[in-house]
Length: 263
Image (tube, rainbow, N blue to C red):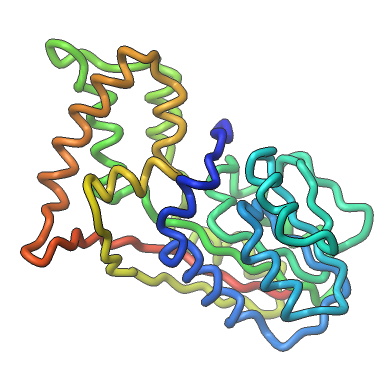
């Protein structure tokens, strides 16, 4: 999937919900003393700072393909090395001891190749720690695909066939897939899932949530007129799927996949 452009302010509208899985992933990293740490898809850099704080003697690199995100990162720390590089093109000069990737690798295709490559990049006994959203089957993301398929005038599709095919791709495989491709390459492998029952507030909160992440390719792939039609239809379907409760809260269950692997 082509990486979308990112708006740091939109992404951080739900900062607590977005950062919590990364913090829980950091807490599950074994007691290691890495000399080199890389945060792949570092986003706005908050978790990269936390990694640097946990291992203050390590050389920490935050890598992202978004110049807007990295501009935000550079306001946080001058000690961390910030790099504008797509994950697919990353070739570190020295083997990292810890590769951390929170809500980033689902944007990268061909995990059967990507994950073994990341393990091979690690130093001996190095650690790979990953969290990815299991959002593909969620109503919010299923409705994206449905509105693209039939939300146009007269039930016609919206956007190009390439965009619809892009959004149809299952971004993250089932946990057993990662077990099968990583177990023989690792001395320790811990894979688990967690569903967060997120409390969202405000007008159109689920639309606001996905606009900071999974909806970006759709918004960028449609013409202005198609985008207006899409958002009107999509907003109405989200309101049905995620009704606001009597206390004003919209509940948004969101499932995530975690893994910690030692080479």
